Image (tube, rainbow, N blue to C red; front, side, top):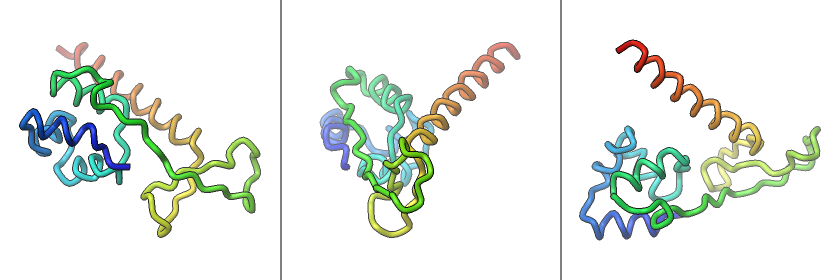
Length: 123
């Protein structure tokens, strides 16, 4: 799902995609895919973008609408029937349970916090 609110406000404020990409420490092509909805924007990135643009998070944030694939044939755990379709089209479907993606994102956040703590300690 295209991030229309984000794109519209970015243009209104005169920011380029490159400037936003720099603010969230990614490259231009990855940010472009985030803005078009091909790649998910994680919570931490939403917060960085809002801070960079000096707007409340609610003014730009749009809920991610992941495509749900019901895969009843190979399911062994009943509560994981909904799977993300990573790229949003029907080719190369990666059936990753929502819980796995959520856990990985939490783990990444913890690792980033630990890195920041260690950098602070090193100083």
